[in-house]
Amino acid sequence: MTENADLSQVESEPSVAAELFGERIDAARAFTEALAREGEERGLIGPLELPRLWTRHILNSVIAAPLFHGAVADIGSGAGLPGIVLAIARPDVQWTLVEPMERRVNWLNEQVDALGLTNVEVLRARAEEVRRPDGFDVVTARAVSALRTLIPLTAPLVRDGGELTLLKGMNAENEIEAAQKQIKKFRLSDVRVEVLGEGVLPETTRVVRATVR
Image (cartoon, rainbow, N blue to C red; front, side):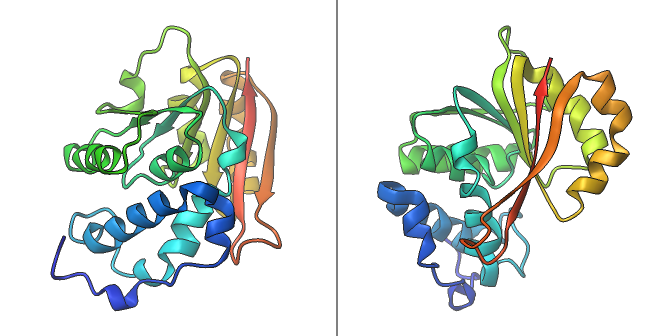
């Protein structure tokens, strides 16, 4: 805990949160509270994020939960967005949270222990250092880098026939256009943008999805 966090600035929990997390809502609340109390001091979130913590980060991540299955890697997991949020929502999926920075790895391990997440492994590494002989079923990332830079980091980790499911911003379509060379080189097919949360969330989530062959 920190005395510096002004929790009066924290966004109130939107009513839709309980619907999206279901019986896992208490774990989601605990994680959000921990991030609110410690996130800025530990360099995990910026000072302007507390008033939109649920809407901009937690709900933006959990809305994608139905898209995942099997063994999933979250590259550059950072504060646990989306990895910890998705692991809370999908205890039936195995998550590997890949993060190179020690202080963020420490935070992730603390949250895994505090929340009792038995479906999570935290790996201190850069994406290019990760080795999994069979590959991952799905690889995800959120707010890491532009698609043309992200594809070479993530696509090699996906098993043949597996998926990239990358949480992106408003420029997702433009990023796909700018990444045509990488899309071809790394044999991505059915590359598209899916908009999630329309009519459900105040801010929709854009996900770039593709199959890796």
